[in-house]
Amino acid sequence: MKLLEIVKDEMASPKVLAMGYAVAKRLGKIPVVAAVCDGFIGNRILARYREAADTCSWMAVPHGTLTAMVDFGYAMGPYAIQDLSGLDIAHANRRRQDATEIRPGAILPIADHVVAAGRLGRKTGAGWYHYPADGGRQIDPAIETIILQEASAGIDRGIFSAGDIQDRLVLAMINEAADILYDGIAATAADIDLVLVNGYGFPRWRGGLLHYADQIGVDRLLAMLRMFSAEDPLVWHPSR
Image (cartoon, rainbow, N blue to C red; front, top):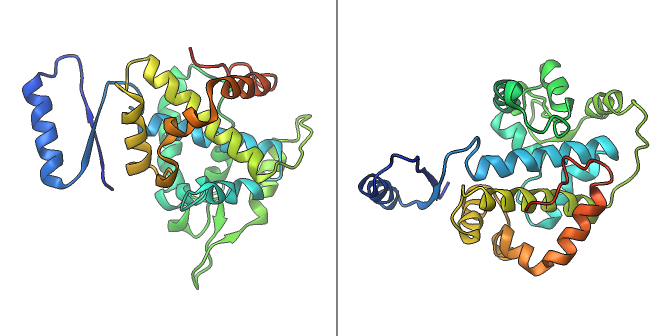
C-alpha cells in the first residue's frame, strides 16, 4: 500500500514530523498527516462506509450491495474487502468502541451475527461470501437468512438500484470526510483524497472522494442528506 498516515499528536515537534516524512520517502510511500482520533482519516471513513453498506443490505435485497461499488470503480465491494482482511478484526474494534459509541443508531448488529456464526472471511472459508475449497467466491444464501432475521422488526425491505447504493455509500463517506475536516483531523480536502485513493481503493480516475463531492455540488449533497435523514436523522445529519 502506498499510503502512510503520520499521526501527529499535540506534543510532536517539527523535527519528529520531518523524520516521519523522511521515513515515508525512504519506504517509497505517500505520507499524509492526521491528528488524533479513533480511526484517524482512512479507517474512520472506512467504518462509516461499512455502516452504510450494512444499512443498505438491511433495507433492501443485499446482492446489489455486493457489486454496486465495483460498478462505481472500486476493485472490490465492501464485503469482499472485509472477507479478505478478516471479520474478526472489525468485530474486535466494535467491542472496543462499545463503551464510547457516540452514534448508537449507526451500527447494525448484522456483522456481529455473521461473526457469531463462525464466518470470519476467506481464512475460514465463509464470511459475507462462501469460499469453496476449489477456489472462487460465491454468494451465500445463509447471509440473506441472517439479514432477514435482523430485518424482521417491521422494516419494509425494497430493491435498491446500483445507483441508489452508490449514492448512499459515497454520500456517507463524503459526510464523514467533511466532519474530519471540521474536526481538524485532516488539514485539507486534498489530504483526504490522497488517503482514500492510495490506501482505500477509491477509484483514482474519479480524482478523490472530496474532488468527486465538488463535482456533485454542495446543494445536491445537502438535499440527499436531508432526504436520507427521514430514515435516521442521527446517522444522516449533515456535517457542519
